Amino acid sequence: MTIDNEEQTGPLNKTDEAILDVMSDGRRYTAGLLAELIDADRAYVNARLALLAKLDYLDRVHKGLYVRQDSTNN
Image (cartoon, rainbow, N blue to C red; front, side, top):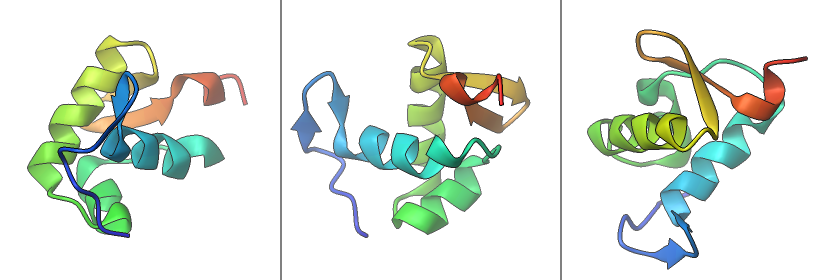
C-alpha cells in the first residue's frame, strides 16, 4: 500500500488512517516498522505519530514507541 501524503479524508489524512488501521491490533509500533508496513517515509510517519499522540489517538509508551489509545486497556 503506497500512501500519498497530500490526500486528506477529513481531519485525518490517508497516512493517519493507515497508521491507525495497522495499530488497531493493540500492539506497540515504531515509526520505522509502520513506515515499512504502509510503504511511507519513516520521517513523515514519525511526524504523524507525534501529531496523533497530541490529538489523543495514540499513547507514546516510550521514546519512539506508540500504541493506539483505545488499545491500552487490553
